[in-house]
Length: 210
Image 1 (cartoon, rainbow, N blue to C red):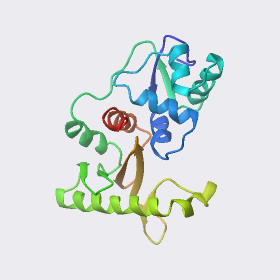
Image 2: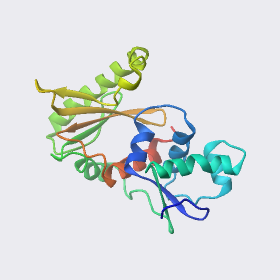
Image 3: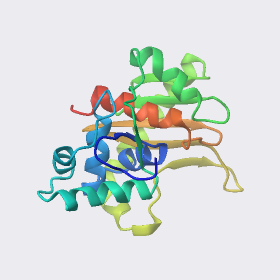
Image 4: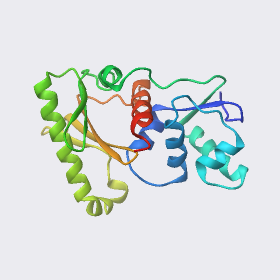
């Protein structure tokens, strides 16, 4: 569908999922994305929901950010609801992680270095990368003031690069509610896949209110 209208069911696209987790800003657009991601079933758009998601009292004003999100390919509207990935995170995350790299290798860890899930790595390697990802999260947090001064030059990920500047291993902080996670990807990231949107959706259903 090409326009958001009341009665349609909204889902977050891979790009919208990225905008939701890459940084922890408090924009109206991000608040709306997070509200939708917290629902295990894609919510139906109504005037009341739009006002609740955006915090705007006026319906027309509340719908404007949602339309902007759709125009920027962050939201999709459907005639029937869709479900978040079914099953435990332990069973669903490895499959989704494997689709996020052209080598099929990725690790998801929490800020303490605990490996939540991995794909394509031996367990010892995955656990080492989980610890490394947590350390990078710590550096990013400690240096947040300095990094903020980079403005438009501030990028969202960290890379282990060769002499040609090509990254074979990249680390991506993810903000899921108050929980910070580190996504480590070997090879070229493939975040434009539905698997990335499903990964973020599954994580937000689980951790988004914590």
